[in-house]
Image 1 (cartoon, rainbow, N blue to C red):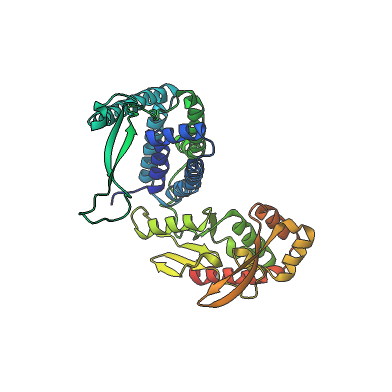
Image 2 (cartoon, one colour):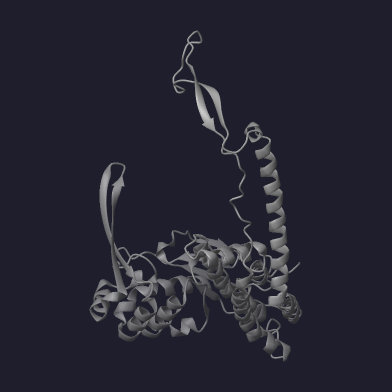
Length: 392
């Protein structure tokens, strides 16, 4: 079986994309016009790449903890080669050289287009006349009404020839003055990637990462969740509900959003890169509209919605209304209240809901873990029931 390491490859290849002509040109256009719609698109591409680093690091952990030594060695050798190759091309001089090549291509296409437009213009009959020359033409009058052929409704119209040819557009060259800033941006992304890679590569190079597969009888199951706060809540719930021993039997990892859970689920279903069976549970929040699914030793489960939950989305749905009200009294910025109205099949509706403010999620999580009681976490038993049902 050929081993495939998709998240490593995706992460490195997508960073290469930032050295492509389209990205550099996009950045140049944004700097020229900061209000361009392309700015949000460009910034989103950076955010997506950064989100992928979570998948990349989890893949490293998967390889280190579940594969034989040959696979581990091969993984880090390939990773080193990929990063060295990228680093060799990641220089301001290289970028300037590429920009000069691209600008030459752009200008050549521009000249070809000017020549084409010029030929087209001078083939027009009006070019035979002089600039500002007066001349008459016959036109049907009025031009917008149909008239019988036997009626003579034509009229002589005097016109002035304003004949001249002007190139209004300029070639959309990449601005060389922005190269230094763009290089710094890409270099910072590369250093972020290197930081994660060295975290594991250096211990491997020093002989500190040794395969565990020969000695492992049963690997700990892994629970993948949407975010860091989910893990924090579950650890606190286990402490209050007497489930800490259960958590000692598993690993909790976050994926930074349900879309990244989806990506990993899809990859693992291909069953193309794992070498040792290990239970993996993908635990989605109640509002993600997913369905439970089993695939081998992989399980996708959705936290059930608490119908009387004050907050309708996220793991916070499991908290009682009384706790949320206490939090609001402590700091009303924790919770956002929203209303929605509309008409469905002729029936008007009005809905109101609340959710944790996205910028206060961390603060809200800290407050809950400090102030909530055992009773406030009682509904988290449904999560522990799911875990126990799959690993025991």
